[in-house]
Length: 190
Image (cartoon, rainbow, N blue to C red; front, side):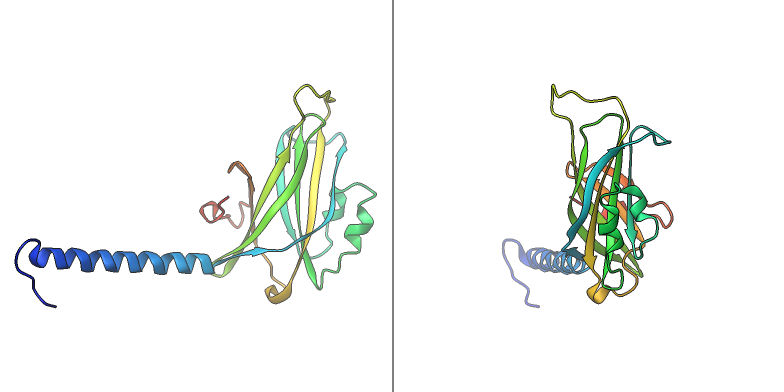
C-alpha cells in the first residue's frame, strides 16, 4: 500500500480501506439473508367463516402447516370439507390460518407465504390481512371463526416443509407463532 503525504495522509487510506471492507461485508450478509428466504406461490383451497359456540378466548389466532389431512378439515364449514379432503398431500402441503373474534363481520386472507431457512429448521412466515366489520355495520355478538386454507406445491421441499410458523398481520402485528419449537420472529418481516 502506498503512503500519501499531505492532507489526510495514511489515515485517509485506512479509512477508505476500512469503509470498503465494511460495505463489502454488509453486501455479503445481505446476499446470504436473501438466499435463505423464498416466497412461495399458493392456491386457495377454502376460505370462510362460521358462527359456533367455541371454547377458549373470544379473540385468538392460529396457524398450521399440514403435511397430511389430519384435523385440518375440522376447522372448515361442511361445504369446504370435500375440497380439503381432495387435496393430494403427496404433491402439496397446506397452510391454514384461523382467527376467532367476538362478533360477526371478520375475515382472514393469506397474502404471502415465505419459507425461511434457519440452520436445519424451516419456518413459514405467513402474512395475513384481517377484514373487520365496516363502521356502522350491524354485527351479532357471537364468536366467529374465520379461516383461509391454501395449498402449496411441495416441489423441491420434499416431505418436510416447515416445522415452525409465524402469522403476521399486514400492519406488522404478530398474531401467532409456534412455541415448540420456538419460532424466530426476527426472520418474519412484512
